[in-house]
Length: 382
Image (cartoon, rainbow, N blue to C red; front, side, top):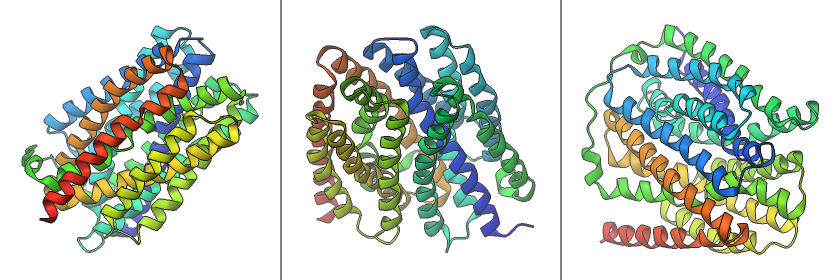
């Protein structure tokens, strides 16, 4: 019987491969639509938004089905690995949209499922620590993705589609690893209980949601249009764009490693995050060269690092351990819904106002979420 540490190592390796692949989808599909298929900024945003429809549908099905956590993860990993090679046949916007939809349908369920798995395989004493390690692993996956793809681009002479296909073996390896874990972990074979959402009455849960969504608009702007902005305004190559993404995610990783030791400082961490976004978004919008834009992206890496771990801690405090799966699934559905609405809005802004104004307008939702966060924080403190 493998030890808890061995089981955790397997889940973290699966998480690493999953997050690297999901990040590739978020950054490469917009570049492929824009510079291979030559679509407009708005059409690019529609393709990305349609993928979020797939995520919402898959999460809703997952939430109201009684399929066990283990079987759900296995099916999602397997079909993601089988669908990624279909990108080779995407010769027009319709085929790209459909393939991207199916890949995101399967990969979209993995975040709450893997998070639940970490809790299931952890002892009560180690649960908080393991969740912090899980969050840091997500960031490491985000760093691995552009490094891995950048190396593939160098080998394939900047062939974007070929570099995307090489993520299928990562998901196949994750599937094989999970089969090993399933054989030794009985809790993953159990049927899930009733899906209850009584936690939505808890103010701490909504502080978690606000923390979760605080970076959503800027994150969409960076992943969907950051590469396009770099290429269009400053002539950056695909490889250079991957370097910028690597710097962004590396900053996030380093900050998340620091936040493991600052788990009791949720409010100061979030308030600093709002302040950083207030400065970095205008810097991105008005950057006159690639170095200034890259600096703004690096600064925004802090806000990306803060949002998820703070959100998970708030949500964990708001629910009992048996309700974590439902709580994180609802949070993921809300996140996908905001992503679905925000992406075409930012796409229209990029199309008709320009990419600079699109980056600047992200200040509005950031400011609104910041005010809501502070109001709930003060109400809880009374």
